[in-house]
Image 1 (cartoon, rainbow, N blue to C red):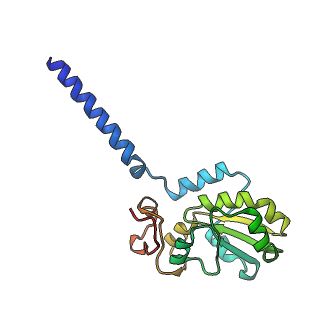
Image 2: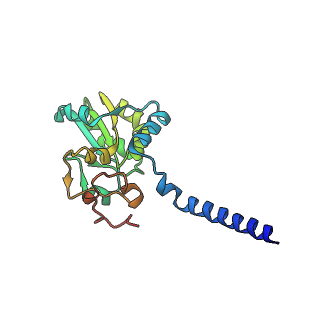
Image 3: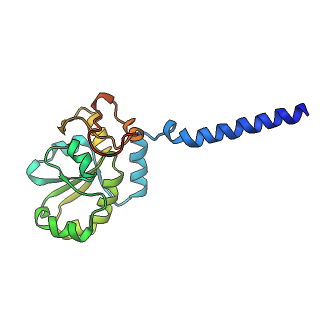
Length: 184
């Protein structure tokens, strides 16, 4: 009887541990910006990435930059000169709206960490090629790495989408949840 109680307690503890691990595991084992970037490079082999240093070295007259975050996130802050695009944009609408702007330009896309912008860039590659874009790239590490490197933004702080993603921002005092969604 005692052995059965000990076994039952161990089983209960194991179940509780697994439940906690499932509930909080993603929080404790969140990937770093470097891990996310490596994953993007592995999963989107045809997409080029550009570092913040290389991006800043480009002539601003030759570059069009797109922020691929929700409008609420963009309203909090963005890289100066960026044009906001919905992560769920329609490729045909993008072509209609921006084809004339893109000829003979380099195009850079970014979002918070690079996932949404890499996905959009992959979808838009044929349109960009047909529009006469000279080069297209995703900003390595997205806006979070940009801010972590103390680079300038237009706005007040940075919207991290939610607390989970906010952990990737080095200076937590820069977090601004003034947008209407996301805070946990």
